[in-house]
Length: 415
Image 1 (cartoon, one colour):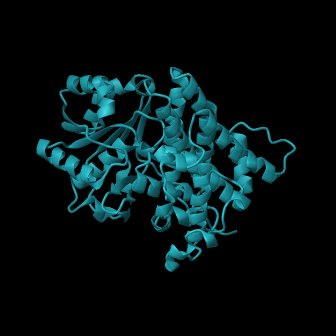
Image 2 (cartoon, one colour):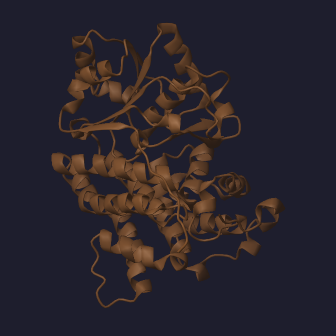
Image 3 (spheres, helix red, strand yellow):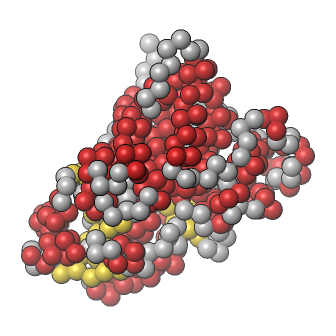
């Protein structure tokens, strides 16, 4: 019997419950913090989602300041500006309140509060040498899972590239899951993050780097999202569905912190960097096309996913059952008004060479279940642009900008 070595840890303390965010002061006090920097965006602040949190901090005599300049796909400049703001006010902990962008920005600010240079210096894996300030994450959307991961994603505007910083230091010290903070979400901000969480779970489950623990977490997240996302979308006040989505998102984040992701994220990050497309929407629109690409590499796992999403696959072959998983994703996108192609998201094919090159820089390609080279990425983008899952209805990669793909990216790669 061969020996298999894998590890799992998530040092983040997670507290969950309706209204629990109003107790955040006492939990932060336990971390030894005395002055907190709240990192958020103007939408969260305008929606008065900070009100209960601020009262809790004040009740425990915790000083705080608010940095509310986080944008979608937070940039290097925002991390720098937030770090300068933190140092000006001598904050000793960072509290993220918002979606994935706020949590990613807070992680970057916490890192740069204790480390020298620029956040760009820490692109890659385990390059942070000094522990960041304590990070507390309060997600107000159910999707990113960043409250349970060891990564942050930042946009370099100079080259329109989203890069990842991965370090065991980036697990938040504390995550607060309060469904009450998600009740005001419009349908669009329920759908896109929810499909983002589902993408995390599906890519984690099928990743080459998956292990039994990450797969158990991922398949549970898939099941919970299948049961609760459309409830949260169509009945926004369903507090149980909202709470289940927050938990599922967190579980999916914990899963991919172990396994990484796949081609959906490799490509969606480039779409965010070049076209500033919101991450969850990019993932949702790409997911059916990459599942179709991966289908023959992992039909058994797609059958598992189809079952977890509530499909009856009795009497079907493994491949037919696996196809049900893709059909379900398409149906979910359609029901929640998510575009079924990336053309509608503003993608232009003239940028394909850059999109391909940037996608191939992603470590997620290495763990995608099907071997992937630059020509494959190019063809996936083309199919997603035109919205077709049928190979016969798209041009051959030989006829579509093939000569512009750098030769060094054409090698097939695998772990």
